[in-house]
Amino acid sequence: MSDPVRDLMTQVVEKNPGEPEFHQAVHEVAESVELVLARDARYRDHMLFERMVEPERVVMFRVPWVDDEGRIHVNRGFRVEMSSAIGPYKGGLRFHPSVNLGMLKFLAFEQVFKNALTTLPMGGGKGGADFDPKGRSDAEVMRFCQSFMTELQRHIGPFTDVPAGDIGVGGREIGFLFGQYKKIRNEFSGVLTGKGMNWGGSLVRPEATGYGAVYFAAEMLGTRGEHLERKVCLVSGSGNVAQYTVEKLLDLHATPVTLSDSIGFIHDPDGIDREKLAWVIELKEVRRGRIAEYVDRFPGATFTPTPRAGANPMWAIPADCAFPSATQNEINAEDAANLLAGGVYVVSEGANMPTVPEGVEKFIADGILFGPGKAANAGGVAVSGLEMSQNAERLTWTREQVDERLHHIMHQIHEQCRITASHYDAPGNYVHGANIAGFLKVADAMLDQGVV
Ligand code: NDP
Image 1 (cartoon, rainbow, N blue to C red):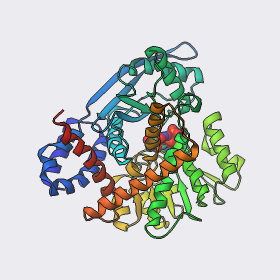
Image 2: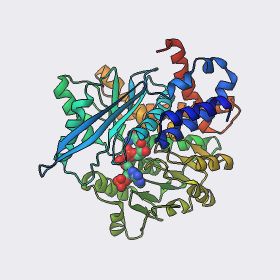
Image 3: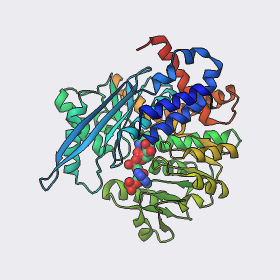
């Protein structure tokens, strides 16, 4: 790493103490951006990367709410508005007990580059709360969402900041959040994406991130003249991204064999077929149960609890492809080595930053097809962008139209990453390709707009 980038990292760590995920995300992009700075002094002289690591605005607020027994709770809400250089802030809301400012800054930072790659005019942001919807009644979740939006509505709008879902925020939560926004602001607008189909949503938005991660894997395989048919695939998570990753893998005749949640994973060597997937979706979205129940219903499968530390045995199962679709840093260095030893040569990250830096290094050194989350999971926000377009036109596109555009956008993202990586003498390195292509788009807009 060059001296200026090392100095920058020292400053980032000093200025943002106790935010390890944010440091990790900035460090990874800095390693790519230094290739640009070495070639073109304009980007360095205008302090563009230094400006990008500083959020344009952060709001943090109290979220008080009352549970079904009449007890009062207080959570902490956030919105990190990272960059509006190429469009309104755009990025999801996460409701999970682990949420804190550093985590949301990492996610907002990643979002800036990801959104730039989609070819659509969207800036980057992220938000959420340390609220755990698990085990809460629908009425409790509604009261929480209403309290959260009572404050958030001051800071967002269809031309300012357009949040969406993320971990713990699905269709139910978006509905409650939208209802409260509409009531307070007395306007029906496209202020959130991931809306219900009969009130402004887009077809294929729920499926988009998972579908996109699979399209990206197919594009990577295509560079070697291969396809996904009959490939054995490991999928982690069992939420939105994981469910639709499995669905698209089935469409392309691959064989998904695992799913997980925060307790453990199931391994179904016969493959998770459409009937089993429909059962999982009902389990997770309606009954809100645990993935361990899968083995009671489908006895050919096994359930293994995830160890608290060390390697996750799920990543040691022999396979061709892996789709980490749960959460950040779920693949540690040992897991990465196990994946390689088990024959995995395609990793397409549905989750944000699911692989630790040492793991990414192993994948790149081994020359496997590694699609980083910024590129591979950009399909979700891309269809959010298409939802915004449909809202602005007051039209609804067909399922086929949206899926075709999603597919085309994933192709374009892949091409940008591939071509940019080669241009910077790192052929096949999708990490450099994604970071640099995203950086250049945002940096050029910032150059045009002056020091603001
Ligand atoms: P969901 O809440 O629908 O599902 C999350 C899944 O991951 C659940 O199975 C959950 O298990 C598991 N999980 C969450 N936290 C942990 C943890 N700390 N350890 C182990 N497992 C965990 O979220 P999504 O599917 O929407 O999001 C998954 C990932 O994809 C996240 O990284 C998100 O940022 C990323 N992403 C999502 C997009 C979207 O459109 N939804 C867009 C782009 C990226 P449990 O139920 O036990 O908590």
